[in-house]
Amino acid sequence: MSSANKPRLQSYYENEISGSLMKEFELNRMQVPRLEKIVVNIGLGEAIQNPKAIEAACDDIAKITGQKPVVTKAKKSIAGFKLREGMPIGVMVTLRRKKMWEFLDRFVNIALPRVRDFRGVSGKLDGNGNYSVGLKEQIIFQEVDYDKVDRLRGMNVSFVTTASDDEQGKSLLKHLGMPFRN
Image (cartoon, rainbow, N blue to C red; front, side, top):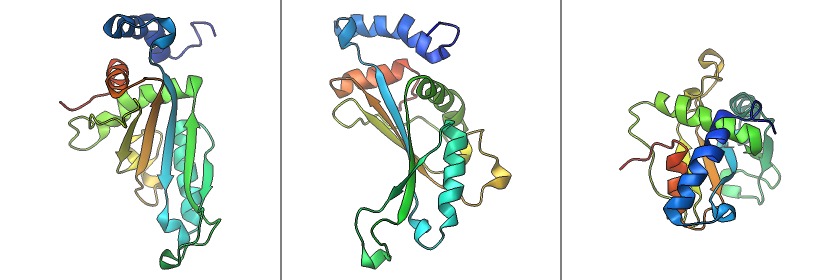
């Protein structure tokens, strides 16, 4: 891929961040932690009563990520929730390569600052260098038209890295611009 087609954040990672991570953790070129994929997920418990919620969530997540989402289905029936096996209960997108870097850039620099009373994201990783953040509303993304939103929906965004531990994963995400709370 030529440097003219590379997303801005990817070029920055390759030219600046990977070198500083090599020095910081005394790693060779192949051991440097990198972002593998970003998974965006919306769980829709309301879809049991309102099947149109799946369509609305699909439209929102497609606008936000630039990629068509996969509809997730229930793995087993739960009578208390009136849920049957195979019913659609969520949508998700896995972003890789160019779309992943562009989404991360928009997420960190445009969407997160639009969160009300934002003071940074939690600094807890999962123990393997991966990070997940929950959002309360999809309207923080400028791609979503506020007037056409039928209902505010939360979403989970998971950043999967090749880091061997939380320290390396957090350092990678911090270098990429993730605003962690102190």
